[in-house]
Amino acid sequence: MLFEQVLDILSSVDFYQSMFRLATPLMLASMGDIVSERSGVLNMSLEGMMLIGAFFAFVGSSISGNPWIGLLVAVVCALLVGMLHSFCCISLGINQGVVAVAINILCSGLCGTMMRTLYGSASAVPRCRGFGPLPVPGLSNIPFIGEALFAQHWLTYLSLILIPITWIFFYKTMTGLKIRAVGENPKAVNSIGVNVVIIRYACVLYSAVLAGLAGVSLSICGLNTYVDNLVAGRGYVAFAAVIFGKFHPVGAALGAMLFGFADTLQLNIQALGLNIPYQVMLTLPYLMTLAVMFLMSAGTAPKGWAIPYLSERRN
Image 1 (spheres, rainbow, N blue to C red):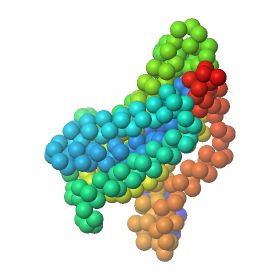
Image 2 (image 1 turned 90 degrees about the vertical axis):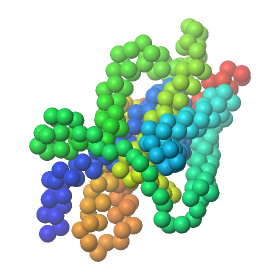
Image 3 (image 1 turned 180 degrees about the vertical axis):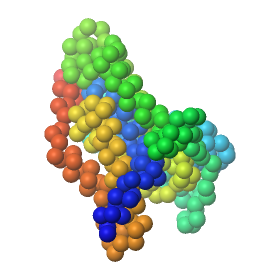
Image 4 (image 1 turned 60 degrees about the horizontal axis):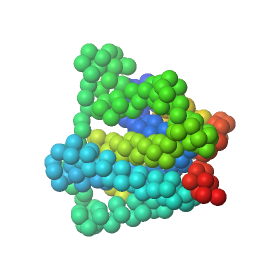
């Protein structure tokens, strides 16, 4: 009986609509993070960047009444977090994992404190204007595929378009080659006149922008509000998807889609009213993602990954 119910869920259009929607923040964050990681900068601050993006998108939209203002505020604030991460890791040469943990804690505390300051501790959080679905004319009318894929909000389309764009950028352009070279051997690249610091700063800031947009997709693309722990570890999942996706755009995107699939599945199974604690179901996406990633071998990291180049040069 349960097996038949699950099959019915997996054969519905609504399931795949939700899957793409829930995978969107992970795909955005992972497509940005892969650029940072390939340049040699470990960026586990995605969690904090996404949280800042989600919170300030809600605040900006709530105050202005315009979701585009919320998006702009979110991106600017995520960029500030990215600048902090870049300054500590690239300019100061501080341990990149420690910096990420500190930034994630800072962002979590900041958002929680500001939420209570601006909106109080009441359980009823105000809603704001957000981005609705944007069906693609013609394509959204295609049975099943069109309904599932081409009736999403625009950030979902952006996340999908970024997959081939990121691949082309890395493997078919000179700039992509320079980024990969910086991640492999920054000393050699610097010796031929390539500014390692500028490239690494640019890559981290780019990842911050996409992480901010990932946060936007969580708070004002359908939910149109903000709650504590809204990101719920998705920044870490996006980071893990990049690592176990072998630092390749397609591999990272598949990891993000897997989480979206598992998250949608657990939500639908909960709706069946089974006598299973909901806490168990909430862990399903994380357990499925971890299980598949453990079965895969992690990709070979760039040789200069997580190594502060400037501190090395000072020695």
